[in-house]
Length: 312
Ligand code: RIB
Ligand code: CA
Image (cartoon, rainbow, N blue to C red; front, side):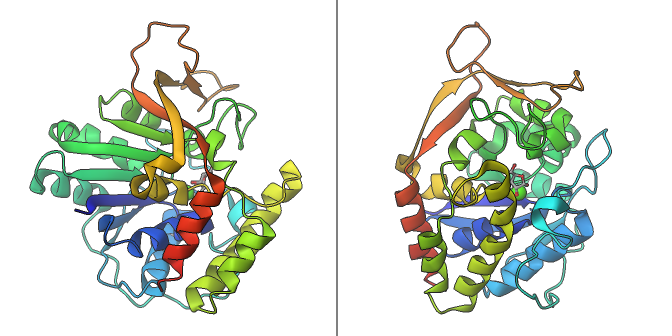
């Protein structure tokens, strides 16, 4: 039985690959909707990009919603330096023709969780947690109905990527992340500790291109563009495909390993704002509130990703 999921996202080339992986895997996940959030680029672009990706997947039946256009209390920080001005720089992309849903994304999250049987909908945030935290704040009754939250964000041993202490998704809206981490939901975190081990090597990108399909070409060109920043910064062979790790975990959790630990969010200090303080070694008696993933079978991850993307 496929898991019902809502993808909350700020496309972003890696978000785009995550959406394509999900839509290529109907036996594993049923995408109830895609909700855009301001993050990598402003909301008008992330919602546009989400529609472009659904059209590329041939899935204009997947409803796309616009959520929050800024963090809960802080000004928006974006990442054009990584993703380019459009957020999906790399290939030339056609304007989307599928409509944006008129309903707000936060209302869609609330309505869906109230409609679907309790414990049947998994939330998959791939960007700042603003939409999720806003929905929980506006409608506390939905929190207990969430099957689980599987999110890309945070870092512990890998430390930060937008500051020395913080990963981008958490950094942009630390108050939202704090609300989510304290929600009591069943939370699985795919942090940089794991995603930085899922690198797009040349052979892996060539495998995308060798598909000879529009999707394969797009993913290869997105990766070529997206990886330049991380390769220069880390001197690595490729770039981490962060967000598809969330969907891959839902499909093949055996490819990943981690620990159930306490994770709390720094929201006060400017120096460490957005840091995910993971009690990996159990040195406190703070309540364990998340499964923090520390490792991934990268070959297995890319084999799954390539097999599924080749379905298009
Ligand atoms: O830090 C990586 C995360 O920030 C990814 O989700 C990427 O898309 C950006 O949103
Ligand atoms: Ca993202």
